[in-house]
Amino acid sequence: MPTLADIGEDNLIRKLMRGVKLDGDVIAGAGDDCAVVRGSKDEHTLLKTDALVQDVHFTLETPPKLIGRKAIARVVSDFAAMGGTPRHAMITLVAPPSMEVEFLSEVYRGMRAIAKEYGINIVGGETSRGLVLMLSISMSGTVPSKRWLSRSEGKAGDVILVTGRLGGSISGKHLKFQPRLEEGRWLSENAHPHAMMDISDGLAKDLPRLALASGTHYQVNVASLPCNPGCTFDQAWGDGEDYELLLAVNPRSVKSLMQKWRVAFPKLPLTIIGKLVLPGEGRPPDFESTGWDHFALSADG
Ligand SMILES: Nc1ncnc2c1ncn2[C@@H]1O[C@H](COP(=O)(O)OP(=O)(O)OP(=O)(O)O)[C@@H](O)[C@H]1O
Ligand SMILES: Cc1ncc(C[n+]2csc(CCOP(=O)(O)O)c2C)c(N)n1
Ligand SMILES: [Mg+2]
Image (cartoon, rainbow, N blue to C red):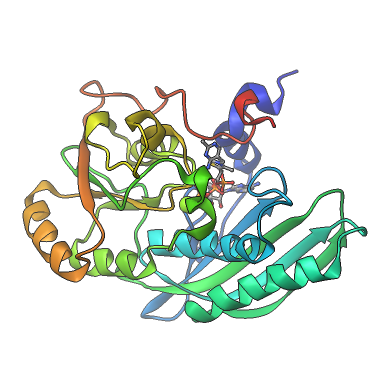
């Protein structure tokens, strides 16, 4: 009998979701950074849930305020990827009975601070005992119904870009990254990307996901990746937890996009790293071996 390690995370989700039927209110179900459901005439509702697990996403040596910060920031990053805005959050807390109360108070201080920064209401949650600390955050929000961005509308010929710099997140950025919320909305309004997502599992995993969803192959120039200081191109390609935006843009809009970007976000690089191509003209979406898969043996401890 195959195990989770044999088939990996993406195949597991595809298999589990195969029999699920959706009604006409669902505009996009599993497969994107957020689900999109019908809201008002002008705005769709976005939904996302994301878990932060002890010894996977943080350790008990991590400053607790930063654990709380990361739990919320990761979800905000998924709203950024859709060109949307997060609004309300619920928090599921699982913790062992031996945990000190003050540790969790600090975790919540961290969550409250970043929720305030991004205008998010924490409206409730759920609590259970468990073997390790886990925080699962569910959020709802909005996106203009004419401008929500998926992973699946990339076209062969599109230029692939990333915001910011990649690699080496484990040395601190995975706790302190700034979700690209303003940038995501700006890109949706000004660049009209065909496809966008955030980079959580590493470009090596997330770029093939975007290509697969869009039905294309891709060409990437690893030596053109914008690396964080001290990082190699391999790290920028495979480390993950960058929480930068990855987008596919019509080649005709790229020049003016770059000019406008430099004015709007002078401190943040926007870098061309490759292009989407027709199947057969580049790397196929299942080609890469690095990047993060929760069930890969390399992710084990
Ligand atoms: N257990 C599950 N059951 C149903 N759908 C799932 C499950 N886990 C993930 N999904 C869906 O699969 C897609 C990918 O999930 P994932 O959590 O990897 O999102 P992501 O945006 O790719 O990564 P991240 O949350 O790190 O940004 C999402 O659309 C999500 O809703
Ligand atoms: C060198 C290096 N090794 C490991 C890690 C950890 N890590 C990388 S991706 C990921 C999953 C994130 O999202 P999700 O849980 O949503 O899939 C985790 C926990 C790192 N940052 N750097
Ligand atoms: Mg995502």
